[in-house]
Image (tube, rainbow, N blue to C red; front, side, top):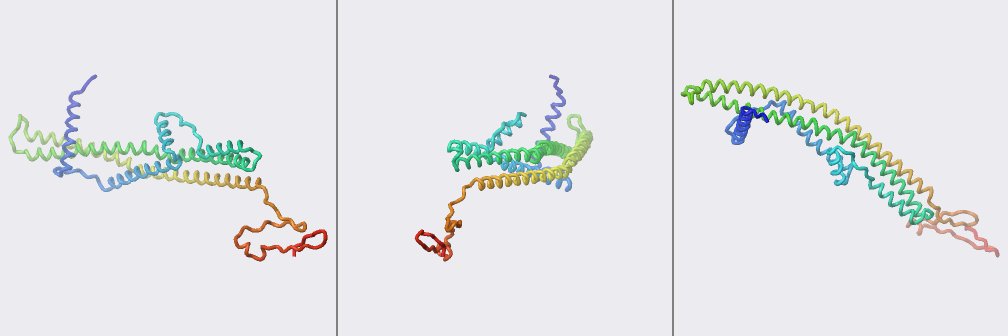
Length: 309
């Protein structure tokens, strides 16, 4: 391999200077170049966006896939770029067990028939749930996670570069101040203080130029957060629409199931008096004490005909 020794030495020296500068800042013995208020506001907004987006994505995925083991499994498959495993929902497993139980009890029995019917509709609910999870992932959690993995990572990377440039700039400023304080002193090792000052000022101009350029690059990325918020707003609307459609479909399924069960239910016993059908007495507690709850009956004639008084 072709090693550039000068570059290695220069990079090592720059790294040492940054460490020294950062240490002096912590100790309060060195100044620090501050960014303007507009930049700081942009950075605060970006940090808040990052933190809250991470929380929202995490909680949304927990709602869509409650099983943490399944979430971890899906995450691993995404990282290795393989298709996620197809798994049934809990409702579908419940439906399968109900259908199996109903078949064992006997489809001809009331309970067995009802179990089979409910199991089939639970499977429909489960399939509807899986469709919702897939749709919500595509329109909401996946775009939000992509934003974190691309735009936010780029911003953090450029902000880190900016911090490095800032340390280099402040280190050069300290060198200039030190060189100026040495003016008028005798040369050391054949190097005059004037030459050291000239070299330090040249390095400062270069550091200042690189710092300003990196500040503008980072600021442009931070200003892009507004566009990201607009995109996330659209994702949020799509998520709400998907969620509303899902619950509407669930309501429709359950309403139809109730109707199916009601239509297959057998009617209760009916009291017949004088060729008239009477409903069974009410189960209400007050019915037993109400005079209308008692039906007087008289017995007349030899043929024992009953009539209501």
